Amino acid sequence: MCTCVVLVVGMVAAVNLAVPMLAASALHPSASALVWIVDTYVIVFACLVIPGGAAGDRFGRKGVLLAGLGLFAAGALLTAVAPDVVLLLAGRALTGVGAAAVLPNSLAVLLHAVPPEKKAATIATWASMTGIGGVLGNVGGGLVLTTGSWRWLFAAVVPLALVTAALVARSAPVSSRHDRRLDPLGTVLLVGASVALLVGIVQGPEAGWGSAVVVTGFAGAAVLFAAWTFVELRAEHPLLDPRLFRIAGLRSACLGMTTIFFGMFALFYVNASFLQYAKGFGVLGTGLGIIPLTVPIILGGRHAGPLARRIGLDTTVALAFAFVGGGLLGLSTSDAETPYAGYAAWLVVTGIGVTLALPTLSGVIAGSLPPDRAGVGTGLQATTREFGSALGVAVIGTVMTAKFAAALPPDVRGAHTVAEALARTGNTHDVVTAFVAGVDAGLRVAGIAVLVLGVLVLAESRVAQGARTR
Image (cartoon, helix red, strand yellow):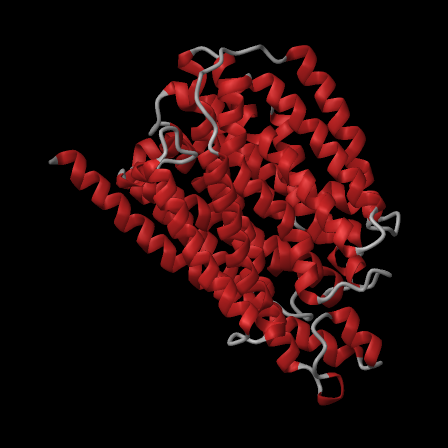
């Protein structure tokens, strides 16, 4: 089950390494298309992961998990052979559908298989795999991309998914089913609302913030989210009952998980390009360059739970946001002349925050729902993670592109990617300087957002504690 988690989460991170290759490829994607290549998988993953958990509850978690691994492999294969951006995005979307079936049911299978006294440790281990999976995706992706083609990154996933499916078929237990109807209308509205929101964010720098497509995207997102809420409140078996968010503890934990992954995957998106363009690293060196982030996760993950019990939930969460937000702000001070050791130190700081946050917040979410809703509860955790990841990539990509385009020399003004700017001029120094300015601006925005949202999470947690004492 941990291998399943590493596979689907690692794909979110690994594709960031391929962004420079994709930008310079024969497909010639625009800056917004590059963001969509990363985010299509993530947003489909995020929006369908709750239906994936509900499907496992109803049709059998092992069967849905196996079907998800098959779709994951098929989508990766389509992406690897795609002749244009449209089919590439279709492959990424299909892979996201598979991932949405895999992730929630991996934990649901585990919770069914282990005795009650081991469930807390199991949840902590599973949650840690989501962080480690992102880093292993960077390292493994770097190894594969040394072949020189981005297509091999997706082709390599196919046999991994099929081997994992064989292992699941052999070892995973069959769990009981629950007669709970699915909610196709709620699913469609949630997907539509999320895509509309990202259209507004991603297209802003190129189309203009007052353009029809951006305004329509934001307006459509507001209408569709409102319609989704209305439908879910009236549904007999809602995809996700909005009334759950009356529980302040659950509400704050979901916001906290979204925020942590917002910061972490914003970092993953810019880290790959920064180390390659600004520091001159190869793709393997870039994949290995993120390893300092994993050191706290590997060494400290099992200590997060005992620490939270000792110093308190609020203090642990406050430290997590302080470390993640502070780490991102520290990374924003890096430039082409910054020694890698200094850059790595800020990665360690960020990793400490992730280590504190993942098991702590996962435990709060998992403990807020009854056992017969394990699949949906796990889906809620995964949705907050992947939606945060999608927003992190979209926001930092938008800020970085806008700042980069504005900082370019006049003779290449109007370019939106480094590859496009370099194709127009031989002045590599000015292009790289503009790119670093864009990265710094993006990381500052992400760091400040994590700190501000962290304050909101703590305020919600205080509300929850007050409600329990009354």
